[in-house]
Length: 246
Length: 215
Image 1 (tube, each protein chain N blue to C red):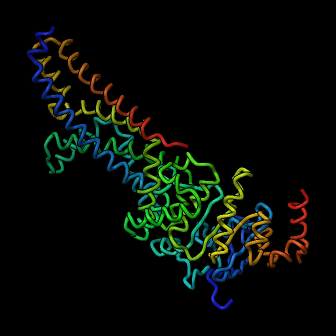
Image 2 (image 1 turned 30 degrees about the horizontal axis):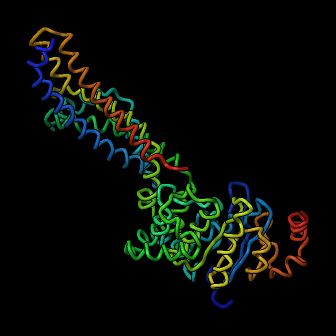
Image 3 (image 1 turned 135 degrees about the vertical axis):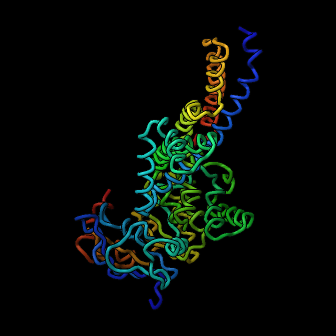
């Protein structure tokens, strides 16, 4: 990994007394798909939220494509535009139509013309399979459809890396696959992705690397097959036994 | 009774027009001030937050009459003399603006943090985030309280009679003095206020229904 797209160097974060991220060092290469896994409260969501600085850090540094994440202001907004994010609870803009959700970033941040942005947005909505819903409002769509729109919204910014924070955890079971399928297509298309998920099927078929976190630190990094078959660390094996036996 | 109103209708009409002008200008000003002060109150810049809190504390805790007297006689005493109408419009706008700021701030707080995070995540800066995401959603949840403020602001224009703005209440008092028919003079103003505000209430209810966010 000569040129990492995302570099985390000695990152530490505290919430008051709680040491939420402990000395995190993580490089993510271009076109790499990294799945972050770990028990609830292990810091995995916090970790990916620091990558676009939705969470601040107290120590260390994070570089996106060689540029250090600024503290605040215009520079930060600009770097954030290069990092797409998909949330557990979708967070589509409730007062805007599906199409407007996808065009907002390109028009307001990238200053793209409205008709160009709409054309592009319709293409993306087509790609995630919700093109016919373009003029509806988010609440009129199912959770799976909303999450696919959220992916299209992030892709519209042509980000260098896509972050997924438990993208299927808020979905009814029958809608999980439609979202995972879109993510698999992205992974196969070479999108750089960091995904917090417990979806083993996705991890096995898409992930280049598994990152197991516990109590704010990265405990183990491994390829998915080796990780699921025989994790190196006791903590990872213990965690896997809890999620897999049922 | 009818003769009274046919005879003095032109006076009521003039007064109503002055009241309406005062309402439009002061309420527009209140909306502008409200958005700016509320923006300051939620901004990441501490001095702006302090300024906004100070503004709200100042104007919300003074009787409106004192605001009017300060703006007219007080400011006049300092050597800055403005006419009664502009003074009333600005004083009332600044007064209602403090309440407006509180209403908008509560609306901003009602927008879920995930909405703002999603906006930040696509690269919106603080101002575009407020303009595109937070305020449009906040405004929808505050249409009803803004309607209340509008009605209060409308009725508060009556205080402008104390600095000789010839608005509706001033006119009815003038008619009392001229005709000595106290009951009829006041009833005319009361009916006009009520009819206009019933209509305004209906407009705000309609807006509320139309712009309710589907959740």
